[in-house]
Length: 283
Image 1 (spheres, rainbow, N blue to C red):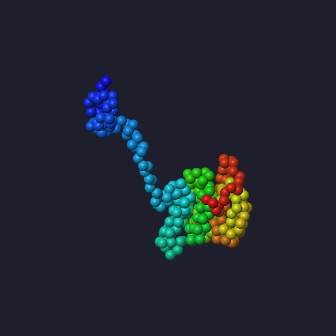
Image 2 (image 1 turned 120 degrees about the vertical axis):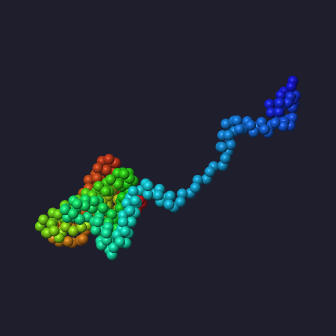
């Protein structure tokens, strides 16, 4: 019986019918054509290719990735940049164009004509220590709160509490001016109201966490909240009687603290958190 080779077209006996047994001239070309026409061969070749090595992300890419998921760091970096502009455009942080244009003025007439000041005040600071104290506190407590509630909600809470704290400061100073005179109106800078609100919210969520009050005194965070609140209430009350014990904008701090406590209680209901798991040194 004769057999025809599908590669060269010649006829061979049963012993030589395979292309490799009769030294087939068309074998190489035939196999090549079958590979080109066959998806199976194409897929096989792709699968057998060595895996591509992914490029290691650069330092800049790592930094951008970290910032995209951490709004707390973005706020800190932007606020620090504004402070650098403050000290580079005048003889002091409170004597420069930024302070003149964006500091919070408690005079109602001026504030009504320049309402942006109740927001812009959050990005100005009176000294390097003022900036450091606010931003290091915001880093530890803001990062923890942002992880729990999400970046967008954190951003809304931070700026809303800062604006409300500014309004509290303005209202208190105008109340004092009714019987102490217009000289008590003055101006203010700093993100303290918003930062205190963040601290208070975290204290309500993690009341048994350990912290250092004023970076010095170790205690439970809720005890620190009470101690800080008591200090600010004392400073506010004696200010009503014309005594300034400490040059803090205590009315803004107290307003932020009230907002933070209220929001922290709302979060307790939402997340059912009452734990000391939070460690401000592990954020």
